[in-house]
Every structure is written in structure tokens, then in C-alpha cells.
Length: 174
Image (tube, rainbow, N blue to C red; front, side, top):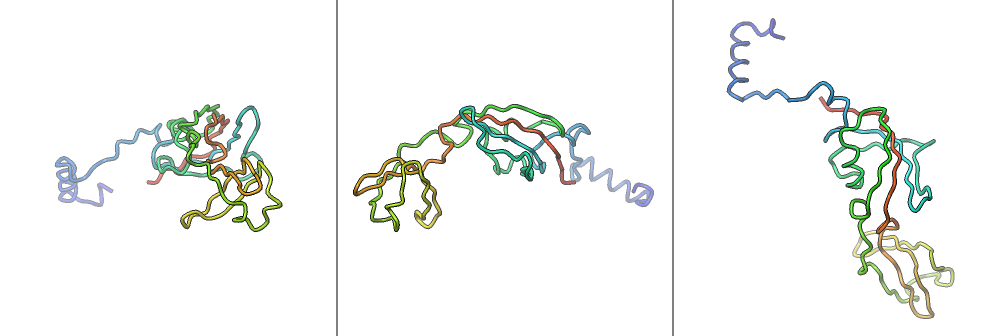
């Protein structure tokens, strides 16, 4: 590139660089192989809650996300930062860094007549619907003759999450 610039072009480039008009990225060679903000990261994971496997990408497509964009839970994103391709790690994430604590205001008493087929409702069952125009999913925690009590918390709220992860690939935009 320098040969094509000529003496005047090289002088202007160096002048602009020294004046701070052109910035060189301060990226260490080893950082190219680490999970950093902006990296597109591919991982395999197994999620365990209360000693039971809840979800896993093993034998399926791996999870792909962009580090620093809030696409995965905060505790996992924090723990994956600075890992390298091929690294394996066991991560324990407390509820406040996962799906949050259980919110007592997320329990709703809904009239049984609000459900089309209320005779098929069961405690522990999952129902879906709309709330203020947004889709919601809730767990049925109690049923009586007139009402159904729903828990609108995420099913993993209040839980400690354990992940076994393997970093499969890290891509950086150039």
C-alpha cells in the first residue's frame, strides 16, 4: 500500500495519523481468538437446573450470538468474555444474572371463564395468550371453580443455572 501512495500520499497519511485523524485499532493478535464485544460466537451448551438437564444444543445446531449485544442472559455473557475457541467451561449463574428473581406481582388471578376449554386445564400446565398486545406464557399454579391462578414469571426465574459450554468458533468483523 505504501508503494502505491507515493511520497506525498505517505506524508499526508503519516501527518493525519499523527494528528489523530486516523486511528489504528489497538487489537492484540491474541485478542482475535478471544470472545470480545462484537464477536460472533458459536457455542455448544448444556443447561442444568436442580441437577436436571433442562436444555442442550448437543446433537443439534449450536447457539450463535454476538457478544455484548444482550442476546443471551447477562451472567453467561460475562462468563464467556475472554474465552478462546476450543475452551470448555462449567458456568454457575445465580438467578439475578439469569432470568431474575421470582416476581410476586407476576402471579395473576384469572376468571376460569376466560379460557375456552377450561375443563382441560391442569395445575403445572402451560397456557399462552396476549397481555397488552404482547404474547405471554404462564404456568397454572392453582385452579378452583371460578378462577385460575397463573404464574407469569419465566419458568427459570429464581433458579441457579449451570451451563457446560464449549466455544466452537469466534468471528470478528474486520
